[in-house]
Length: 148
Image 1 (cartoon, rainbow, N blue to C red):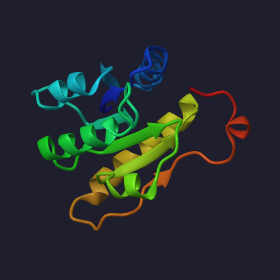
Image 2 (image 1 turned 180 degrees about the vertical axis):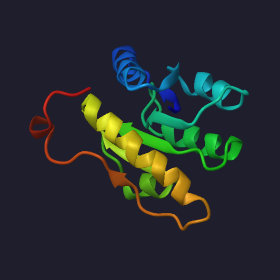
Image 3 (image 1 turned 60 degrees about the vertical axis):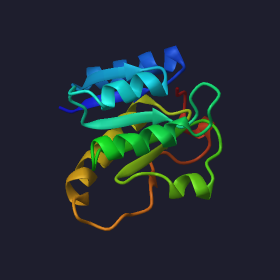
C-alpha cells in the first residue's frame, strides 16, 4: 500500500484520517503545520501522496503553498486537498496535478475512495494533460452522513 503524508492542524481530524488510512493498509506520516510537512517532504522519507487541509492554522492558503512546494521537491506527487471552507476558482487554478478534492465533512469511506481515485490517476497522469480536480463527495453534509 501507499505512504500518506497527512497535514491537518485539527488533532482529532488528523488522528481519524490516520486511523482510516492505517486500517486500510497504508502507512502514514503526519504534520500539524506547513513547516513540519515541508520538513518531511524535503527529507528522504517515503511519501506516495499528500493529504492536506487547505486552511492550516490562520493561513487560508497554506495547503496550496505546501502542495506547490511538494510538487517542486517531488514532481508528480499526488495531492488530496480538503477543507470545510469555500474554495475559489483561483485556488483551484493553483492545485497541483494530479489531485482530488475532498470536502469536509467526509467519511472514512469517502477518504478511501479519494485515495483509490487518486493513485491510479498518478500512474495515468505521467505525461498527460492536466485535468480539473474531481470532487469525491456530493450532496449536503447531512446526506453524506457523519463525517470528519
